Image 1 (cartoon, rainbow, N blue to C red):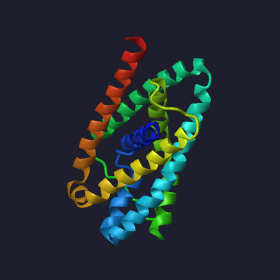
Image 2 (cartoon, helix red, strand yellow):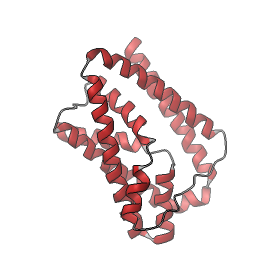
Image 3 (cartoon, rainbow, N blue to C red):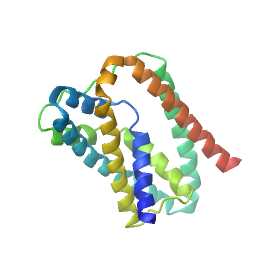
Image 4 (cartoon, rainbow, N blue to C red):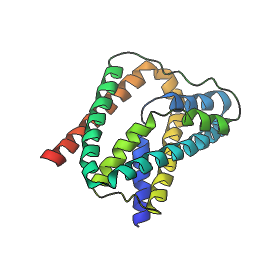
Length: 204
C-alpha cells in the first residue's frame, strides 16, 4: 500500500507541475490536431519518459539535501519562496494576453515528445518544491524502492495531464488566450495557497 501511495503522490505532483500551458502541453495538443490521435499518444509517451528523468533528478537532489536535518528547514523555507515566486509569475501571466508557441520540430512523435520535454526544464523546480513539502510532512520516503514508485508515478501523471490537453485540444484552439488567462489565474491562487499552508505549518 505504501508503494501505491508513493506512486499516487508522484502522479498528483506531476499533474500539478504540468498544469501550466507550456510548450510541451501545447505541442501535444497540436500533434493531435495536425497528425491525429496515434501521433499524439506517442508524443505523450516520449514526453512522459523525459519527465521520469526530471523527477528522478528532483528527488535525488532533494534527498541529498534532506539527509542533514538542518537543511530540511531551509528547504521548506525555500519551497515557500518558490511557491510565492510561482504565484507571482502566474498572476502576471494572467494579467496579459498570451499565446503559447508549440514546437515546430518535425520527426517521429515518440522522439519529438521525449526531446521537447527533456529540454523543457521548468518542471524541475516545481517538482523539487512539492517533493520537499511531502518529505517535510513525512509523506514521502526517499530510499529505494519507494523512490522508484514515486518517480514512476510522475511519468503516469505526465501522461495523464498531456492526455487531458489533447482531449481538450479543440476547445483550447477555440478559446485561445482566454483559456491561458483563466488557467494562469487559477495556478497563481493554488501556489499562493500552498505557500500559506507551509507558513502556517512552520510558524503557526
